[in-house]
Image (cartoon, rainbow, N blue to C red; front, side):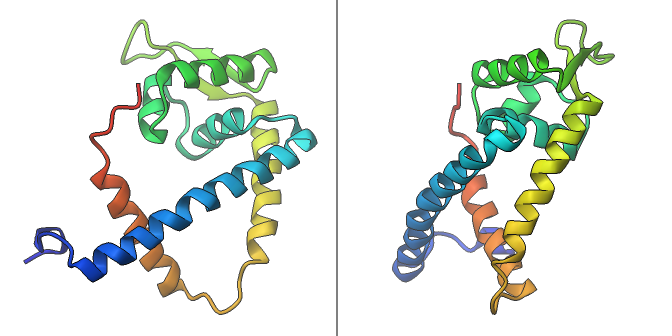
Length: 157
């Protein structure tokens, strides 16, 4: 029997998963505020930072692809892409797979901006350390990924 076939979680496990949800909200909001506080360094909003990072990680993408990947509405992603384009951080290029849905890709300036943000964030994350192990991080990613997959059917538009 695979992990995903085990059926409903026990009450104890359900309580522990509730603890995870209770931590994710404050963690997200604090991380969001930290990005906002540091935004003047590169002048990026949290939304533009998310767009640039997706493009850094995945290469050129369409607005709908970015929306699905981040569980964000296409309208919100389009506004962030437009903001990034107005600043010369991204550009629109033809999409060979779809005539109307253009690909968005980083410009050199966009690559430099997101690299600076990424490097600064990694410097902050290096300070977390402590007694965390690779196994701890692997387990955390596994749990959060499972919770995210469980909510795949939530409509973000």
